[in-house]
Length: 103
Image (cartoon, rainbow, N blue to C red; front, side, top):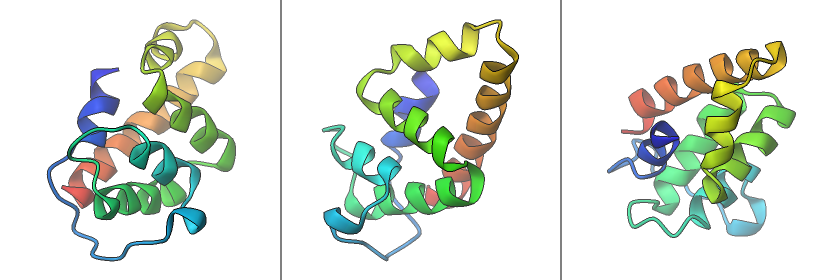
C-alpha cells in the first residue's frame, strides 16, 4: 500500500513528454486524479509508459483503482489466491521499474 503511494508521489520524472488528459492511459489518469502534490503530468505520464511495458490491460485497470483505494492493494498482497500473488509480483516489478525510470 505504501509502495503505491510512494510511487505516485515520486519527486520528478525523467520523461518530459506529456499527453492530454483525454489521451492518457488508465494509470496516468488515476495518478493525475490522486490529488497528490508530486503527481505532476510528467511523472504520471512516465508511470503510464512504464505500466504499458510492465502490465497487461487487466492489471493496469486493477492497479489504477489502487490510487483511489490503496487498501485494495493490501488485500491483493495478503490474498492466498495464486492469481493475486502473480499480480502482486508483476506490480512490484512495475513499481521497481517506475521508481528507477521516473525518479
